[in-house]
Amino acid sequence: MENWYSPALETVLADVVAPAAADIDRDGSFPHAAVAALGDAGILGLVSATQVGGGGGSLADAARVVERLATGCGSTAMVALMHYAATAVLEAHGPTEVRKQIAAGKHLATLAFSEPGSRSHFWASASVPVSEAGTDGVVVLDSRKSWVTSAGEADSYVWSTRPLAAPGPMTLWLVPRDAAGLRVVGGFDGLGLRGNGSCPMTADGVRLPADARLGDDGAGLELALPWFLVLSAAFSVGLAEATLADVVNHVTKTRLEHLDQTLAEQPVTRNDVGRIRLVASTARALLDDTLRALAAGREDATLRVLEVKAVAAEAAIEVTDRAMKVCGGAAFRKEIGLERRFRDARAARVMAPTSDALTDFVARAVCGMPLFDPPAGDPAAAAESKEDQ
Image (cartoon, rainbow, N blue to C red):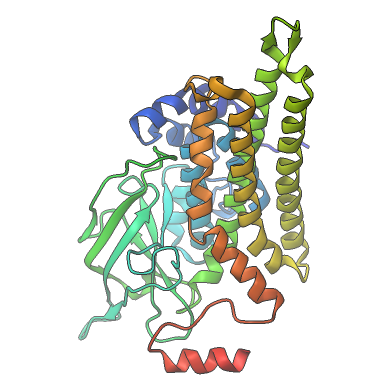
């Protein structure tokens, strides 16, 4: 069944996103035109509540958008992914005015989690917020972030720190782009996703009111992680599907003149194409089942959320790797787009939580263990973790 946003999404994808993908990748430029078009089409406000003028969409709707965008431009898809993950937090706990701006497509949000000290263990923030003495609840942030998608481009950042006082891995804060002391402190010249603006940022003495906190102290991880993991899987599925389409187009049109046959008529080639379809279908099936599990509140929903990003990320890597083999020298030419998808697909494996970390989470979950080890030097957390075991 077609959703209300699908025609607009396909128009933006065909007219703005896909045509600019090669240039964005080559230049490492942020997809400003695509973000503006998605805002004008109501797609940036897709998951905002109808009460604030948004589309009232679900996680499944956001996953569909990210998947489709990933078929055209991985960088644009990643910007949208982070925007939706941040918006989910803001819809639950953010100020009404910001929610209205997002709903109107005039406000780009993003997550700011990863830090140099914790690297891929983004849940172990080294940032310690300080309640400023003699003020009415003002909190001061001194923090470094190593990777922030849409850095310097977003209108607000859902920023993670250690909790003020409560147990739990992290607390989230709404940091506006014009906050004094907030700076982008580097550029990004990466292997893939070259236009997603993933740069380091610092918060040097950023002062926030107490009501800038998003949700309960210590509860930040559970607010943002499910959306991020599911949408990351959708991103990888989109890349895999686009890669398969490119491969099929190539092998059905390219001929071996001496045999008067297409590449698709070669058994070895068909085996590779079949493997690509099987791997991509497996990732899609798990993504669909994860969305159903969350919607139904199934007992295995948390496990599915932990599984889905890792499975889809590794599937996209296998699919793009096999595609480079199938299409041979042609795949190395930039005009086909396969080598760009090959590079973009590798980001999901190392983007925290990494595939290895998620595999460990899954093992911990099925063994009845806590997902996270307590921070070093935290005896209360260590005792709590031991009791949980």
